[in-house]
Length: 314
Image (cartoon, rainbow, N blue to C red):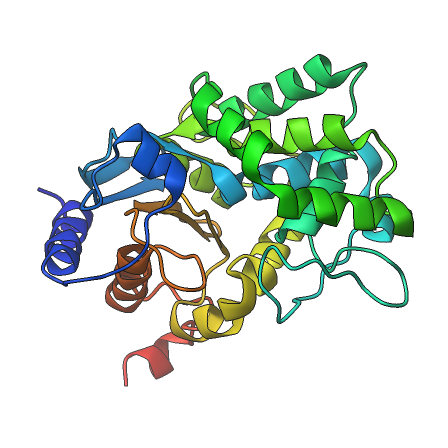
């Protein structure tokens, strides 16, 4: 057993012993996903895979998908045009806040719902089907296998999430949204409903860590020039209104989703994924937070935990 494999197994066992009382997102409840599911997976930029726990349990990408569609929009339109439509500042508000920048009418950043909906409006394609196929294809390149949309998750989100419709109408009034609201939301909910497991998610993180190239398949999923942009926004905004505390405690670019997944990237080294359904009040996986904090400490992963050799040895 390698040191990395033993490390993640030890951390998983520690997290399993922690009693938690968090909410479980309705789509997980409806799919019968066990609340005590827990998985940790790591994929290095050399393609080495380490995983433990319920690492084959499928989960919807949900908000983690925002990372990958933001990259698509950057490639489709370039940094300046995307920045004119979607900002890059933390909000200090809930991820689903009906709130835009006062002076510009832009969403604050692409990691909150408003920003991700605006990003969906920026995906190029001849029609909705073409745009969706592009999103699925590129997300599949990140994961290293063909992904599919979970129809029950999509149907639930599209029929029940009136708050995002309110956000879309607000952005239409500000000029931040230009496409048909139903089409844009249709694409947004489809991307959120893509199914992955923890190993897939770790491959997606490793692809970003590897400059946009999947380390297992060799397929390029994102141009190298935009990897920095995606990771920067993940670091400052990916954990919503607790991004500051995450940066302080864990110190990695990351993105969470209400299905219980958390994606982390150690640039130039590896991708990390955790899955555990019970959520904190902020909407992050409780055990996922615990696992990432432990991994950061044990493996010295914090981006600022880098010192000259003579200092590190003291």
